Image 1 (tube, rainbow, N blue to C red):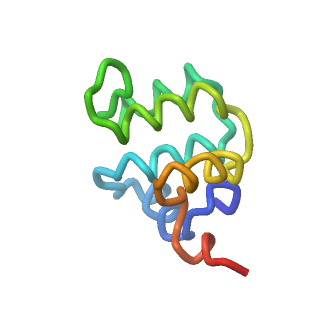
Image 2 (cartoon, rainbow, N blue to C red; image 1 turned 180 degrees about the vertical axis):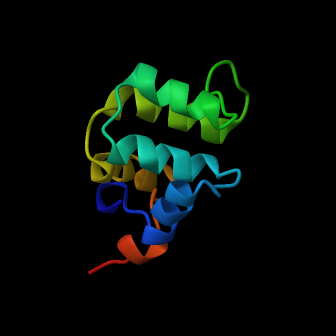
Image 3 (tube, rainbow, N blue to C red; image 1 turned 60 degrees about the vertical axis):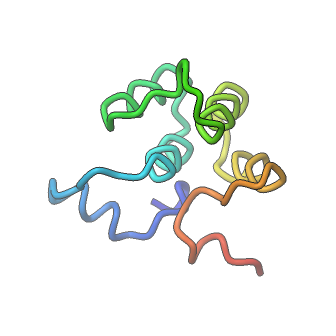
Length: 99
């Protein structure tokens, strides 16, 4: 799950079928890591119980814009957009450390 910048325990949990409810940021990291197009990403978000449509949540508005603009691109492009907008980067902390 390196392209998604997720720790290997996420992949292991999916493989074993024990993945619990994930944070939206984790689902978005998977979308970025798999380079899903917008429709595929929206379907994955919906299967995890999330929708970025018609929401008043400012965080979700930023995520919806990001998904529209950066779908199918590497996760670093997503993070390059998020960080200047005051949002934490997607992916596990160990992959997002400076250096």
